[in-house]
Length: 153
Image (cartoon, rainbow, N blue to C red):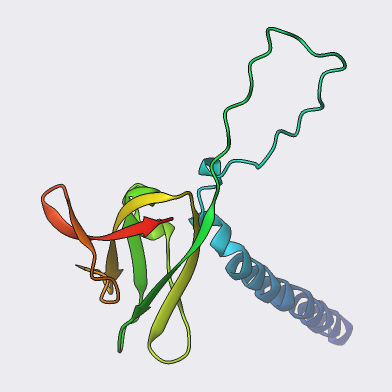
């Protein structure tokens, strides 16, 4: 019986040494790559085609439409005591879960978003409450409610 209990204890210790770090590593990997689920990459277009050019030109070949130029827009909100800040707008189909802002030093929350030039309507969701962007005085109406207006040049 002594040998059997010693082997069981050794097997339990080996199992703990192998499984606990792997669970912690798995959780760390999930947390690190969680930002990928918040981006809709289907709306970003490559700057040029990845296809090889034809060996000889064809007269009936139509030119590719020009790709939109992207600008990196920084959303920045300063809110004291907020636990969570999100942005919902017409650029992410009004889905606040798609754009979570990251807390920086002090009470500032920020996120960078690639957008083509144009006008965009959006609203800040601070701890579940929809509010206008306190740092942007430009507003517009969307479905009967007042929202912030962003112009990307």
